[in-house]
Length: 110
Image 1: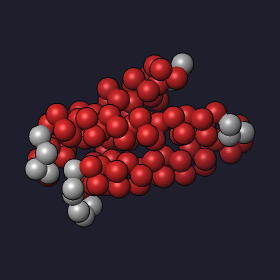
Image 2: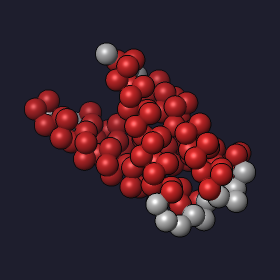
Image 3: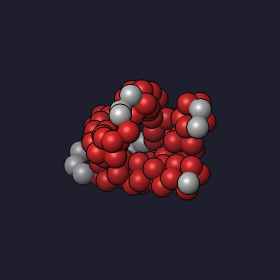
Image 4: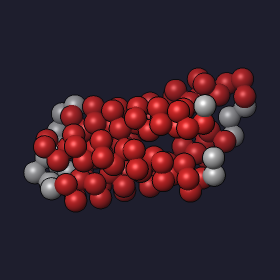
């Protein structure tokens, strides 16, 4: 999958999850929450894509799990800061959003 399509898939699948989960949890409205979700994806997706492209075949799945875990934590932290949230909610939203985008990628790529 070309990079622009992968980024688009990530944004299209993750932003609604973040918006649904965090609009209720924060004082931010849906537009601000969705904008923050796009921003965190633009921060984390390029380095994730670059890193995974350079992992040797035999270690791919372990690297994939580690990289996705790092992305989950980074996105959770960025969302908590952007929306002024404390506690586990932004991290749970990040876990859900990233799970949805990974699943979508697996379904599309076979």
